[in-house]
Image (cartoon, rainbow, N blue to C red):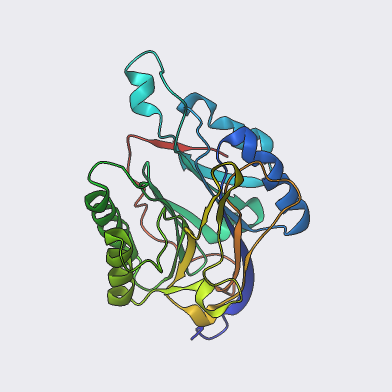
Length: 270
């Protein structure tokens, strides 16, 4: 329940696997013009550390906070194979007084906006070595940050690379157990989009539901949608939800200790 004199504000949040920066930018441009999201969680931008500034140049009305998954490849010398991975969280600059950047790694980013901890995730895909172990370590690490901000509500969103309705997949079983243990709910479960595909690849004749938004307080989320933009060169569809946040009387979040830690993949802009 909101404290005395605290007002509420609805924030629009979009999560989207870009399948590469150049492929995903036209879709994000369209979403900004149509949905006008307050927060955009991007996965798989494929940019090297030196090129992360492209987000700042393309989206000057947003604060950007993210990572590259290409650091080790750059450090090793010649780049071989196609680019991969990378996360970026974009937050409208008008929310600057309500936000705090918390932590950034290759597979998850943590920011605080008003009374919400918002975690952008990209989980390992099928075939990744030690996939279950990596997922267990990732969720344990992100929950460490959740407990550092125990008074906040929590949103975990992104590309999970697994159908959470699949009861035969070890990663799906683990994440569902984690959700039950920590009071998290799928936002799509109460919508008409429950179970509908978010990954669509006509060339491979394959589609599945692998992008999700999890919430600690499902009653404060609404309007979940799987969006179908006119322009989309990615093999993922954006997912959308509105979140009701508590806004302090002075319009600023309560000051907290600076817990932002240096990270191998850390890169901040704006």
